[in-house]
Amino acid sequence: MKRVCIVGAGAIGGLIGAKVAASGCAQVSALARGNTLAALREHGWRLQTGDGLVQAPAVASEQAGELGVQDIVVIAVKGPALPAVVTQIEPLIGPDTLVVPAMNGVPWWFAGGIAALKGARLESVDPGGAISAAIPQRQIVGAVVHVSASTTEPGFVQHTMGRGLILGEPQGGRSQRVEEVVLLLERAGFDATSSTSIRQDIWYKLWGNLTMNPVSALTGATGDKVLGDPLLRQFCSRAMEEASQIGEAIGCIIGQRPEDRHAITARLGAFKTSMLQDVESRRAVELDSIVTAVHELGSHLGIATPNIDALLGLTRVFARKHRLYPEQA
Picture 1 (cartoon, one colour):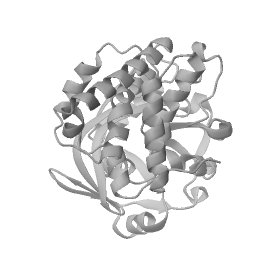
Picture 2 (cartoon, rainbow, N blue to C red):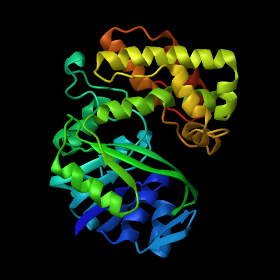
Picture 3 (tube, rainbow, N blue to C red):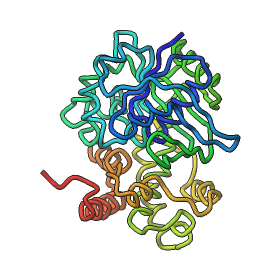
């Protein structure tokens, strides 16, 4: 039986951990701290779904050495926490361990192997290259999460909608190891699929989040209100067109117009983006993986991004004012 460790048992990590543990198809542990660690030790995994409460015993520790080497490590922390986390997880990772980042936006490994970037690293999501140095690229399985969940209290997850998980090799193509992870997640009740182009899947999801997340955070508005204003909708479209140009340059071609994506987003109604939820909860915003990395890619490629730049500057100042984003060094 495979050993699976969840690093960051919040909404997404807690959802994955609870479902895999309850399925009995793997030995599941959690690297956690504070109130979340205490809740896992006292109550185990807890997940509220539309069908009822899912519970399973949890092995949890704040010391990775107590958990030992794993077959699969799912990293589900917020982007701002990742540099600190990678200094703690070395005892979890052996030579054959697969590392699955279940995170928002552009991951730290994204630029590796893209010829147009000529070896450039994304400083915005991998400051100083510390994350790449700690987690070998060959052990990464890329992931895209299409679920909505929240934590109503530490260690208690509310599943709102969606069960989609897409996994794939960073370099593309198919592999047996990805298929094995997909099968494990399917057994746990997810709509898991393998992708031959996980970068494309990551970029497509980002293409929508790039504007909706920061605009909603700035305005405090739900998705329907953002898209309901013609001028704001047009601004979002122009930023998305810039991101499409970047995508084309790195082999992640978007086969839609911004209006096509707006129509899909509009079906979600009056929803709150993850960044707006973070602002309302006074949590650090994931600005770098969702917006700063796109700005940085444009700079590396020589592609002008005036609308993305404006959005980044506005959101950065807003978040700093509210102490949700680091001040300039």
